[in-house]
Image (cartoon, rainbow, N blue to C red; front, side, top):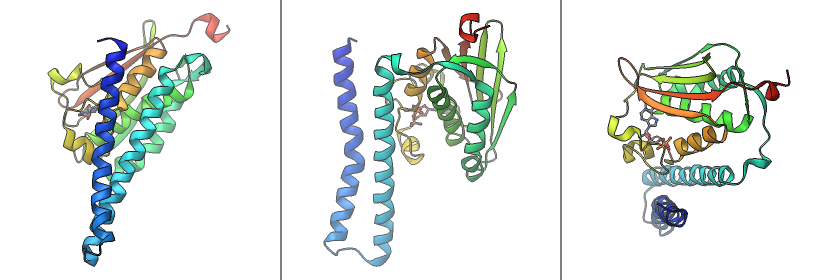
Length: 234
Ligand code: ADP
């Protein structure tokens, strides 16, 4: 597909994604405005309006991130970053969400340096961990590992969740692609998280692979080239 066609398709998808929550906000608020709703339903409709508004905010945030990643990365500052330290902060931040979903979230590995942009790397880790929690099951686990292998520094995120069937695995990095639309919406997803991860990994000259975790769930492995001596300044 050429660039122009991609853009058209993206715009059509964005419009569609904006329409659903806006239709619900407009519909519910109109009912309230007309005084047609009893007190109990007002609370229920209020909740729906709130949820739809939050979905719009997430969607707009993600679209802005994608367009930033599309822009030339010259403005993005690259430096030496300890991937393990970033993962620590991320895991710490997501512990509350994990607890709410009754999922155990753990980090292992050790200090590993990559040459990259902190904010982008942060988003990579955050989105993968957030998904691993959201698409998990009660009493499930998420294991995050940062280590190195041969010439690469890698981050792996393994979960014991619902898993991704092989036929979906290669498509999940596409913008707005979701395996289960209803579950994604329920989980507050925009369908853009993994495409942001994908673009950010590529901007670092890295690769991302998805597969099955044993005995169940999914496993994402992100590999970055080890920093060169020029990049480390040694
Ligand atoms: P979303 O906002 O829908 O979560 P993403 O781009 O982050 O969008 O993910 C795309 C789709 O890939 C999700 O809708 C979900 O179906 C699937 N997915 C992502 N991560 C996982 C995971 N860890 N386990 C199972 N399915 C996943």
